Structures are given as C-alpha cells and as structure tokens.
Image (cartoon, rainbow, N blue to C red; front, side):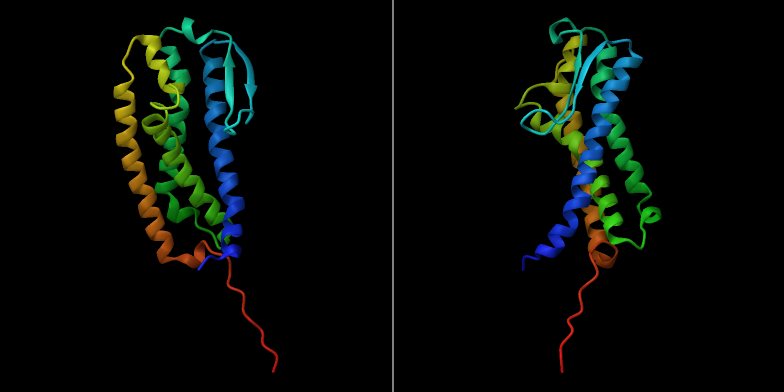
Length: 185
C-alpha cells in the first residue's frame, strides 16, 4: 500500500543528497579548471531545463586540447564516486539514532556511487558528449570511456543493491517512527 507519510519523510533527505552530489560535482569542475589555469567565465547553478549546472570556460569547446581537459572534465566523476565509496565502506559507522539523517546518508551514498557512472555510460552517448567529450581534446575515442563507465556503473549499482538489502533488514534505522493509534474507551 502507498504510504504518503513515508514517501514525504524521504523527500527532504533525497533532495538534499541530490543537491549535495550535484554541487560537489560542479564545484570540482570549477576548482580543477582554476588549478589548471583555465579561465572560468561563469558558474550557472541549476539554470537549464534539466536542473543541472554548468561551468562556462573562456576556451571554446572546439579549441580545447591537451590532457588537462581530461582532469577538468573527469575529476568530478572520480571525486563523487570516491565519496560514494567512502560512504559505503563506512556505512556502519555513520548510522545514527536519527532515521532522517540515516536516510539522507543512504541517498547520498547511492547518488554519489551511481549518478556520474550512469551519465557517462548511458546518457552521454545519447544526449550529448558533455564531460565524455574531453576525450576529443587528446584525440581519444569516446567508446572506451562509455564502456569503462558502464562497468563502474554495474559495480556501484551492485553496492547500492547491497545497501538497500541492509536497510531493508533494519528499517527502524531509516524509517520514521510509527504512529501509535490512541483509541477512546
């Protein structure tokens, strides 16, 4: 049966975790570009129709060449997946007595593990090159990037599956406390 209260309970931690993953990803683009001495014209936070952000560089896409573009484009995916792995490996340590905090950390673990590999493997081949297009800056084909990301996505997806199984065994750690019905009489 559909439990609206339970769904609403998860909405806030889910949104916060997604925004956190997204912000760290885009901020990593920004910081890496600055470290590589690439001029950044602007940082657009959640401004397009897909609620994603963009870091706008001074160098046009057609003029980008050199391996530093691989770092600028791909380091956010490495950072976010690494954060997801750390969260997964330390999951028994971060569990608290607060179900909403646990739910937020659960969603953060899942998002950090899966979002970027899924984008690189599944979405980028069909909806524009995006970060994967950095392979062009060094003359590499894109298909190995998609394939590698697909393998990583399968592996991180399995970790999220394990996380889901563990949370199903201990629902009291993640779900809101049950309301007790008081009857008059």
